[in-house]
Image (cartoon, rainbow, N blue to C red):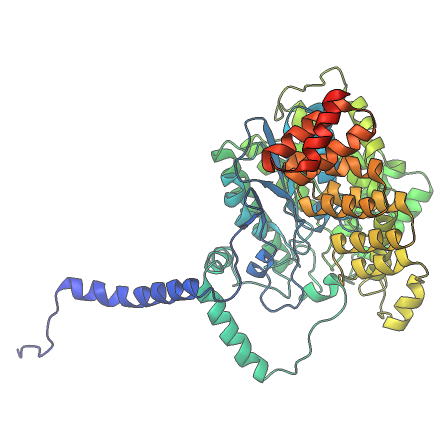
Length: 582
């Protein structure tokens, strides 16, 4: 038998041959990192040296071929958690983000009010990471990074975006085709090399495309597989996706001993008919079940009506509202890991006419109205406390119901936020799937009927042409120009309440008030600015105003602090002598 002419190589030769492609990729990744190619998709970014916040560009991990990339509220938290800190993270989709009242009218903000009320001695940090049009893939992708920040509690409300949210089985931003491959894809998205590859593919694809991009609301852009029949293979894929990701999320929290509460999902079932009703032989359609539900409701047969409305929602082939199967999954996984459920749906029902959820708690098909968000916050807080996930209260003399009444009285919407929310809902409902034919821009503007400066700014915010903070700052400047000083101060306080660590907001407020000699009105702003970052200027002016108010002892304190930063200020030295004399 002839001997083979093939040369035999040592085993390590094959190992090196296999490693070479990986070494090339590592070198490419290192080079791209050095030259800061593409977008930074790290989970956290540093702000003002002392704080972290969710990276505003992180939505690009989940949205690759869309001009519209969602972002979370710019909630900051300390890099070094203080010893008296109480840190809570909120995760989920647009309902957790607070649409259409975000960022000031969310259940996370209500939760923050309750914590501040009963733990006045603690440093409260409630960080809302929720984003529009994301689902359990995003939450699962973020959960490890959240746990790294040592949270005391995590609140989760998700499930409505499971089909049409990013990587959902029916989404225009669909993934790799399986749960495993989607998770690998999310891991790869953290690397610059993946960005480079995607950009090359996008550039090549653009050469052969028509250049037309999706328009309309986020609902229009995200719904690729518009019709998903109940219990069909693609429907079941969505359920399996939700089970797998939720199980992974809760297991990660449990393994790290991080307390977590997950909310059950509520929808508008009474006042929102099915979007798409599939006709089947010998079986009533979604529309028919909905009509039967209305008839039973009008007869006062509420139990039967609730069942019929619920089944009509489940049969709705346009899956923007989570099917009942998802709440069953939530209960099963919560029971498996012994974590509490905030029973949002149950409480909404108990507080609704006929125990059926409609527009009394919902602003549209699934997003709560302002009363709904307050109720969600109440249920999350009470559930966490009753299950022992929160520390012993400083104000233990207050019952849970008394706490809610106080927090409720302090939790209100500004005029601009109310108008913005109303316009957002009008814009949403003027497009598919709420109407068969979307309104033209001219028709939409006529519907919105913008008349005041507040209306115009609200429209800019509601249509994403201006951020929430930019809108309120512009309105504050409008009030300032028109000598509406109380309204100006109110807008600045709203901005500060949303970003209490932003020194530039305090400086903006008191510098404008100084120009008008409104020193007493400026005092709260300069005192808070000095508390955040003491300095010669803030200490000097706090002392000046306090002395003019006859508060000599307090004036001495701030002027002495001012001298620590500028000991040669003759004006401070002179006035300090006067303060001592007083």
